[in-house]
Each structure stands twice: as structure tokens, then as C-alpha cells.
Length: 287
Image (cartoon, rainbow, N blue to C red; front, side, top):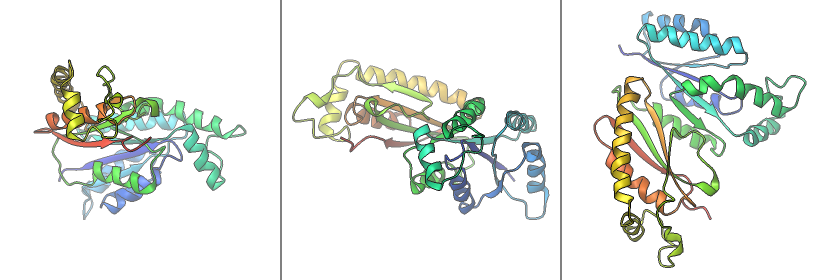
């Protein structure tokens, strides 16, 4: 039996409980607040006992430097046993976290005698290295519960045990900010902006006239050709390193024309053996 193991961690208030509940609904055996030192034991019990489980999710609430170090040590020990744990890291902006804690009128677990934002900053600094090791980072700042569940389901809800890279190509507008959970960022602002053409302005990069205009610009096809090669090269390395989830963010000024058209084209080119692709348009429809 092939074991699938997920460690759910991240910032307090970013949605760990929601993600854990979603995984439980998807049939995962979920263990909450398990000390990192017991992670290996949990895996042994889950796979050797009668009615062995094939999908285990562990929620790690990291609130001390020692705890964070212990978790990384536990993950390294599992790797030596040829057991790769996928790390799901949840985060959100300071503004979103403050709003959530204030709505439930609870202090931050690392706040101490200081302010709420002090506790958030301490935890963010503590988890910085763990975030860098994560297989999948989800920014929940603007997600509601249903949207977060949808993202978790998309990442962990299928039964495909292949090593295919799960690639999300997301268009965005720079004026609305960078997607903080992006692994790779592509800038399409070197192309002429259809916004300044009256007949194209009301349309989006999903419409044929805008798509034809964008792709006809000097450098557009060459850019797609070269970046397709780069992503395939990186995808091979990601799979070797056990990284399964990648977010490729494609940006233009407003996230309506160039980035949408180029995202659709990149997704079509990259989809194939070894890479499962989905497309999201973060800012399409915004003014």
C-alpha cells in the first residue's frame, strides 16, 4: 500500500482547521496537534495496524523555535525512510489575520503582553524556513471557507498516485499586488496593452480578438516558446526533488488582457504527460 502523508501547518488564523476538516471529508485520517517527535510513530501505527490507512494528514501547530526545528528533523527522518510528506503551508496577510482574530475576540497564541501584530510577526519569522520547504503554499487572505476547501480539494482530493506535477497557471494584475504564494512570476507588460485600443478594451484575454492581438505582437510567440522550455526543465527538477505543486503567476497591469491570453496559451502548451495544468484568472472581472 502506497502511503500519502500531508503535514498541514502555517500561520495561526490562516485556515489550518478548515483545511484539516476538508481533508477529513476527503477520506484522509487527520491527526491534530501531533508533536513532531511522534510523526514517525504515527506513520508506523497507521500503516501496520489492522485496517491500515493510506492517507494521513497531520496538523502541526508550530509555536516555538524548538517545535519548528523538531518538525523539520522529523520530515528529514521520514525522507531517509523513503517516505515523502507533502507540506501544506497556509498563510494570510497581516490585515486579514488581524481582522480574523478581532472578529473572534481572541489573542494571538504568540502575542504575549504585546500587540496582536507583534504575535503575527513573531510567528511569521519563526515559520519562514518551514514555508520555504513547503510543497504547496496557499494564501487565504481573500479566500472564503468554500474557496479554501475548493483549493484543498483540487490539490489532495484525487486518487491519482502518479508523480505528475500539479501546475496552476494564474493570471493577475500588478496593480492589485503580486500573488504571495506564487513559485514563479512572469511579467507580460513588455507587450502593448489592448486596454488602449477602444474596440478591445471591453473584452478580455479569453476573447478571440484580444488573444489574436496579443499573440501577434513582437516577442509574444518567442516568449511562449522559451518559457515553455524553461518550465519543462524546471518540472523535471521539481519532480526529482519531490515538489508536486507549483503556482506560475502571469501578470500584466490589470489582469484582464495580456496576462489572461498568455496564461491560457501557456496552460495549453504545458499540459501533457507528467504535468497536470489548471488555469485561474485572479483579477479578471475587477475594475
